[in-house]
Image (cartoon, rainbow, N blue to C red; front, top):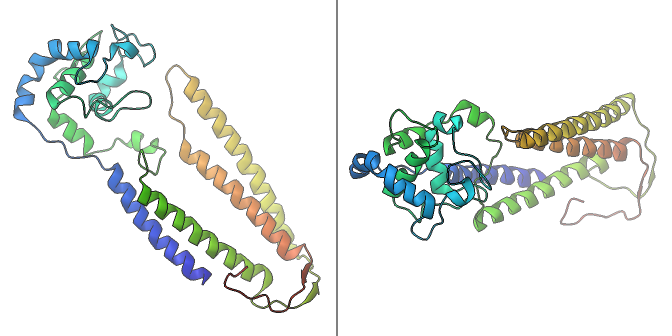
Length: 285
C-alpha cells in the first residue's frame, strides 16, 4: 500500500505540473492593424493623459511613478535602461500588474495600453528607435530570455485556484502516508514481536549518522548564506531578484538530513519495545 500511495502521488503531481504550465503560459496576442497604425500618433497625447489621470476607472501612473517619471512609491521610469532593453516588459506589467501596481488589462483597451507603454518608453530620456507594437509583444511572449528563466525562481503560477489547492493537498497526504509506511516497514520490520529489542549500531550506521548531521550543518550554513545574499540584493540600488529555488533546495535538504538522522537513530541506536503482539491495522504505522 505505501508504494501504491507514492505512485499515485507521483502521477497526480505530473497532472498538477501540467495545470501549472497552463496557468503560466502567456495568452496569444491578437494584432489589430488599426492599433498599429495609430500607435505613433496616439502615445504623445493619449498616453500622456492616461499616465497623468488614468482612464476606465483605473488610476493614473504619476501618483506612484512621479509626474516626470522620477519615481516615488513606484520605481523610477526616467532614463531607465532596463525598460529600453526589454520594452515588452512594460506592456506585460501594464496588463497584468505587479506587487502593489494594479493590472490595467481589464480597464484599458489595446489602443490605450500601447499609448501608455510607448509614452513611458519615449519620455524623460527614454527613447525607442521604433514604437512598441503588438507584433513585438507577440514575439517577446513566445520566447524566454535565458537570464530571466534562470532567475524566475518559481514553480507555480501567480495564484492558485481551489482545484489546484485540493489536488496539491491530496498529493501531500498520499505522499506522507506512503513515506511513513515505508519508514515503518524499514525501521520496525513487517512483523512486530512482543518484548524489548536491544539494538547495536554498526560502523556503517555510525558513519551514516555522522554524515547526516554534517549534511544538516552544511545546508543550514548555505541556507543562511543564501538568505543574506538575497536580502542584500533586495536592498541594493539595482534590485536583484531572490533565488527562491536555492533557498527552497537548502531548506528541503535540511529537513531531509534531519529526517535521516532521526531514522538512523531509531533504527540503530534506540532500543525498541513492543507491548502488543498483533499491532496490525489499516495504517502501516
